[in-house]
Image 1: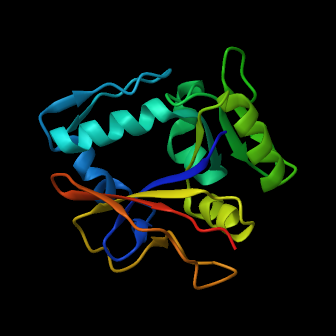
Image 2: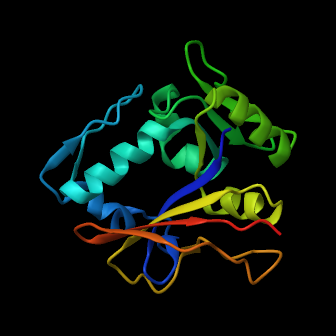
Length: 197
């Protein structure tokens, strides 16, 4: 059965982007190692990670069959060239952007809410897990009780301000399971099960 897994990088002080929307500091660990990891997808961009990070990233990638994300993440990633490396992408949006949908693209837009988007993404994942990107989308999934796991990469940086990953939670404390921890170079990879109420 597909799980809904939050997948994000953030600073040690909890920011997924700086105050101007920049992502460089929280994703620097993707480009500081000596192991090449090819993402695939329509716009392949090889990453250079440490061996522990590459092992972690490749295992995570192999478990994923679809992506659920928000409009800001979609735009920041320039639509992943029309095809996300982890499978069909489902983008929460109030309106479908101009020029979309595109022929031969696996990017889909969902305008009728988070529950519909989760259902569509799980069906498309074909038994694999669904990655959830974007602070707002992750918060919506947590608030709706839909998220099964949090996979967060803690970059070795303090940003001080910006976009927080866990800023607008409806019910706190949210109790998580014991972490699975893997140290990389410039990053600590953490996985937590989300305990259901």
